[in-house]
Amino acid sequence: MERKALLKLPVILTTKQDVTHVHRELQNFCDLVVQSFARHEKPIKYPPISDSLRALAVDNQINLHEEKACKTLLGDIEELKNSLIIMHISFPNDPPPDILQKIVTWLRKEISPNIVIQVGLQPSIAAGIILRTPNRQYDFSLRQHLYKNRDKLIGVFGT
Amino acid sequence: MVIWLAVIIGILLVIVAGAWFIFRPKKKATITDKLLSNVAEHDVEHIFDDEFREELRNRGRLHFEKIIGENAMFLQQDLRLTTSQLNDYMKDEIKKVLQEEFAKYEESISTAKDLAMDTIQKTQDVIEQQRLVLEKQMTDEVSVEKTRVIEHFEKNMADIVNHYILAAIGNEIDLTDQLDYIFQYLEENKAAIIEDIRSGT
Image (cartoon, rainbow over the protein chains, first blue to last red):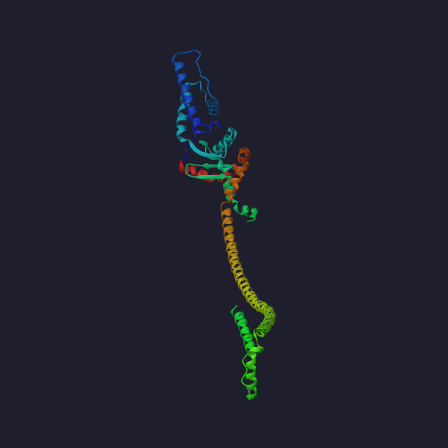
């Protein structure tokens, strides 16, 4: 059964590596905040955060300056990491980030909010993508499109 | 050569025989004749003295030489005539033999020519048959190969077209332009993907 989404993943976090990176960053952030509280530093020193972590906090409406909220977010991310659905997508060439974000947005909206993707390169597919889920592979490449329209091709070439 | 020698010897014998016939001894005559003969014998020595005999001998010698010369001339004429006839005969014979040989040679040439033509014609027929067989064989092989290539092409047409598209504009296809196509396929397979994820997770 698909688990219920604990956190809303921002679109900037497209891959599992992004999530892991944010998790590690948040862990360091929390550690530094706790150390600052323990030293009774005033004002509390908050380390700079990345756009990914900021987007995660904003999308989930979490104030990272609160120690409890920070630790809750850390726990949720750890739990989220175990429930991520990884989809492997092969592209004919290196995809730009905006394309990846559009695809991820569609997948999270239409399929599951916990989806992250793993990008692969396969120049032989020419155009389109090949999507591989944990159990199946979907070939949306130009080659497959041509295979499906083989009769039309034969008609065009007049063989 | 021997024939000519024999002819010459024969002519000489005839001359000698003629001389002997002229100067042969006379038969004894009757009594009168005998008397006359006796007188003649008695006077013969007186009449036919050495000078007269010498005179007769000279005349005989001259006559003999004249006859010999005439016969030699006749013989020479005969020889020339015979030689001329012999030459004509030899020419005719040689001509005849040569004509016969040439005719035979021409016939042989004609036969060999006919044989060669016949052989060439047969060879041409065989070559033509071989050519037709080869042509048919080549046509069949080309047809089979063409069918095989077309089947192969049709079977792998998608790969071939994909390969050429990739080679031609592979690096120029923008992913942005493909988004509609990708989302269309994702939409078509949305249910299957959801089902797959539900059953897989």
